[in-house]
Image 1 (cartoon, rainbow, N blue to C red):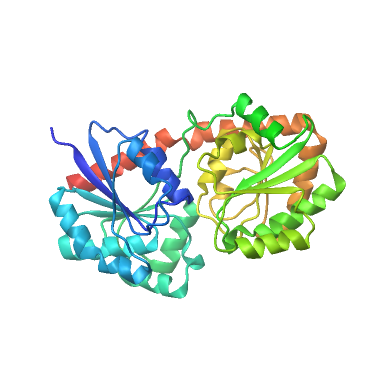
Image 2 (cartoon, rainbow, N blue to C red):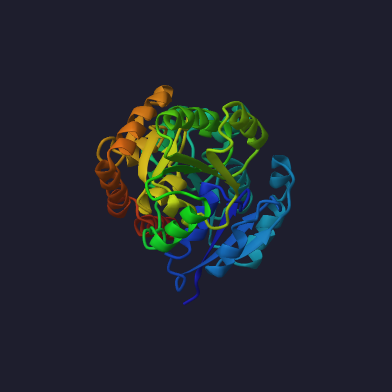
Length: 371
């Protein structure tokens, strides 16, 4: 029986959460039934390509230097779909989504779109284009209830919107004691030092300046605390200048983009996020799976993952500075730190496994293809 060929379209295959998830899900999909193709557009954001190919994906780039050029690639994508007998197109993030909707209009292949963010946080042009084109597709997947609510309120879609919560591979993202010791020794951390970290793209919504300010405040009370921000992005220069202004150059490590974040997460004790908005962040789920205690704002889907006081601790977005109280509690009480580290992993195992997400996604594929 021939395989069902699915084409994922995404703007880039850099180290963003949605892009990293595309690599991870291939390990759970039934590749005896499905064949997955990937098209992306930004040549300089290709960090996930090798991993996707190693996991059985077929990757093709149609180079485009800006959003408008992405849309001009639609005829080439349609030719690719015809040549490879693609049965279903699955798009991620707005501009890939716009391309997919034109493909649906011109070629009438089923198109599914995964929405990773709430509508209010998009640029007004993106919001406008989303609204007028949203029904030019077969089905939409929202990664959290918060995202689904924003679609209903802003767009009032006529097509189905299904919630499939993001997941994490709990068999792959496991704390490694050897990695932890090696990384902490490399960084000169002592056994009783508390290592607070985050994995983030340097964008305004991550509020990394506030992260630094929060860390500085807790560091002044607890000299055994060390910080780490893994990632890179367009705000790097601005954030590094703020780091210097805060006098935190020697206390917060910036290792840049890391092809393998697992040794870093293994070394963390606490994973802290100060975001002003989120969909359902993959890095959070990975940190939870690797037994980091969580301290975060309740942005977007985070409040659907963390039941504050049960699985970790959250504070309202506008009260991000209150996260210091939660840090204080975990730093002072080692038994509490251990308890919430264990609760993190238990939470994702029960409700946010990659296996569950892939099973629901494949069911959505079958449903679309049978109609």
